[in-house]
Image (cartoon, rainbow, N blue to C red; front, side, top):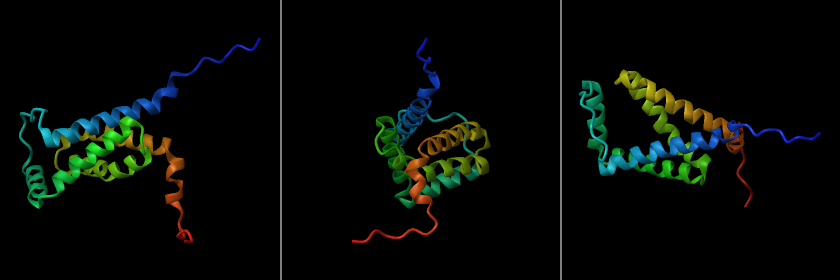
Length: 142
């Protein structure tokens, strides 16, 4: 007769990806302030160390990066303003990938996973981004 179709476990994929990415950015963002994850034993390359030290010397970049990660991670975990969180974290993801491609190749696999998660979620929420992709937008009349 009319048997109900079995529900696919893939219906939870977006929630799982969003939660995984949110948890990762929340944890690593908070770690930037609280330092609860032990530092790796392997020393950073000279270029990677120079880059990180330059960010520290600005006085604002490191707190800005970790604050952005913490905020975006929390929003993703709480399922609040997800498109905004994805837009906020996108430049961080780009820099994670670029950093590992140029200065710390051993981290490329993790950077690639983060990039794939970001791209998947951007695709899953593409309807929310559609208005930003208008070539010639006009401001709303007051």
